[in-house]
Image (cartoon, rainbow, N blue to C red):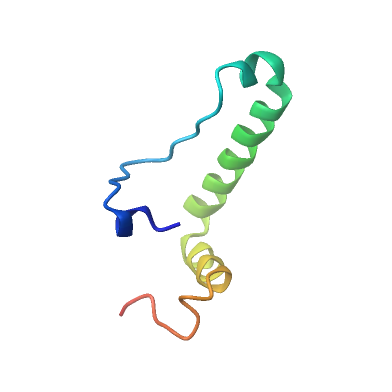
Length: 68
């Protein structure tokens, strides 16, 4: 979802869950945060490839250009 199209300003990455989830299912929370951190590490270390992968995953961008 492109939040900016709906006038929702995003200034960073946000993870949200019900208050009970970390208490009742900590393994799920650890897995989500661990996966997010792994993905961020990949993006920071491979920015060009990360852009290519992102564009490939969004049909709206296929056939377009990052620079346009």
